[in-house]
Figure 1: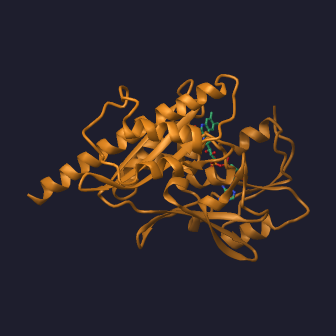
Figure 2: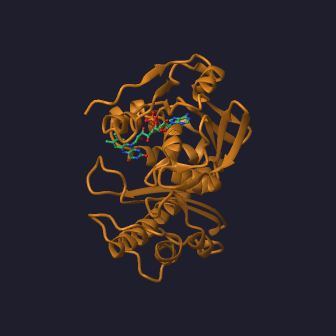
Figure 3: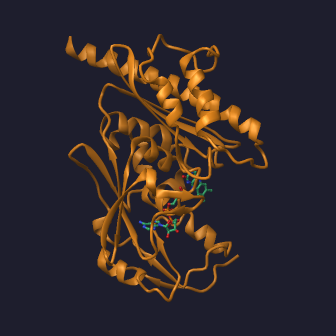
Length: 310
Ligand SMILES: Cc1cc2nc3c(=O)[nH]c(=O)nc-3n(C[C@H](O)[C@H](O)[C@H](O)COP(=O)(O)OP(=O)(O)OC[C@H]3O[C@@H](n4cnc5c(N)ncnc54)[C@H](O)[C@@H]3O)c2cc1C
């Protein structure tokens, strides 16, 4: 199908974009990478009167470290994060593990990380990582700028805290220290499908004991989720010897945390190819495997830093 007729504007500055978006009488949409919006317009599920194309606004095209955070501007494409060097330390590794699960290369070369926050899909990899890491979302409207924590941002499927007329200018993530191990594993029907289930895991450990665990869940509820109960079950637990994520005994702390994530944190919705029982099982298994991956990453980073010191 062809989209219904719409007006188009390509402002050169943020204030110009905000003026265009502030037209209360018309249904406006921001165009970033267009990888979700244009599909929806072709299907006529979204029929904007005015499309505001932000691709010619240079001030939105930035990726920078500020204090201990990484700020990702609204025009940074998914593809940038295929290199683990795009972000410092373990954060870059986590992004690189996650990004290859987003669609396929042409979509990743156009779609933006920040656009995923504009869209607010429960199966967004970036949004679940933002939940796990307590990221912040920077919004700007004609009335001024504000910052919203990821935990307050997602209200439901494709529904967020963003108000009509507001532009998301950037998303900010805390950097991760070198005593942190990261993991990201996704399960889906075919390579280019959205995730049935995915988990992001971030483990910080000292002297072999987990001091802090952070777990983000993808497509495990009506919005991106943080698995607080599973995280608590891991605090103070020994990271233990390397474990094969595919053959974990049921009593292993990561297997137990996976079951807690599935039963207490997640609130999955049945889908045509995945009933509730199957989805809960998949959440438990994927979470446990991702924790094993993060623990292995922690071991290899600690080994490297000890080696560096010698
Ligand atoms: C076949 C296919 C498979 C896909 N698979 C995945 C997947 O596995 N995981 C995944 O996360 N995504 C997936 N996507 C979506 C893709 O990642 C999009 O790039 C992403 O959802 C939105 O980014 P965008 O820059 O393309 O945004 P657009 O499509 O331009 O915009 C999406 C929405 O967000 C709003 N928006 C965008 N930027 C801003 C901003 N700065 N401020 C305010 N509002 C804004 C728009 O108005 C629109 O409503 C897939 C898409 C396709 C077509």
